[in-house]
Amino acid sequence: MKKVADPASRLVRLEDVLGCPDCHGPLSDSLECPGCGVSGSRNGAQLKFAGFSDTELRQDPLNHVKESVKQRFGSLYPLAISLLSPVYMSGSVRSFLRGFDLDRELVADLGCGTQRYDPRMLCVDGGSYANVDLIADLSRLPLRDGVLSGITSIAVLEHVPDPDAHIAEMWRVLAPGGRLFCYMPFIVPFHASPDDYQRYTKVGLERRFQRFEVLDVRVGCGPTSGLLWVLQEWLALALSFGSERLYRAFVPLMWLLSPLKILDVVMARHPAASVIASGFVIEARKPAVRESRLLA
Ligand SMILES: [Zn+2]
Image 1 (cartoon, rainbow, N blue to C red):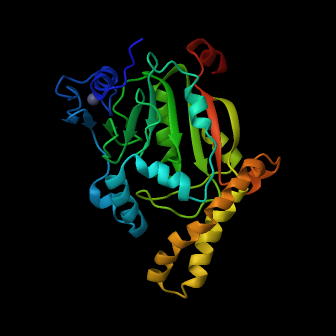
Image 2 (image 1 turned 45 degrees about the vertical axis):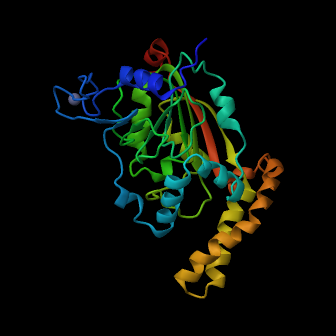
């Protein structure tokens, strides 16, 4: 079977499911909603409806550095993060994706950043990185109802000012029976991208998704990751004696401690790991139409 992996065929698939971010109705060929007047624009294979300005992405000093690295190194950024960061995450996103026939079923990564897990996935983000297919506001998706078979959301909910509005959009654009995978940090220092608003405990995360059928909630990144990132920040604060410049210089040095995260291969499995876990994964399903009527 031919793989729908190239940007042109991805664009055809995307244009097929586009809708007005306000009324969710179909758009004209020029990406305009005849009723609301909302419109998007094309830039090669990339479609843009809203999203962050460059100034917004660079407001926070650390995020400014991150944004420059992301724009310069693109897909190498996630690799660098997985090597240098104090957070150890197992490969559970990929095993979630293996549950789909990506040639036929459309799965979107909402808040993808510079990551692309599979060439057949739809990459959606507020930032206009090169790998992004659709630049949009995550709480106002320019997609029609029920067009996605699956959604991934990796460390995005903490950066969304109104997470419930974003989750309501996930519900709307998922087809009945569609499934989602969401990773959300718990014990993690403040990190802007372009801002940072909240953390959830395991039950807190489950509660956000109570409208869905929750299939699994588990530790996604373990307690060593939680401790290490906090410890790195603490050491940089303690050793910089009140100087913000020294603090910023010290943070990357503290990455020397990051390899200790490998302890989470074992510690993330501790029955009480959720007490200081770095983050949780929730997998949930939008019930099929008949089931949701029974549930209502
Ligand atoms: Zn409209």
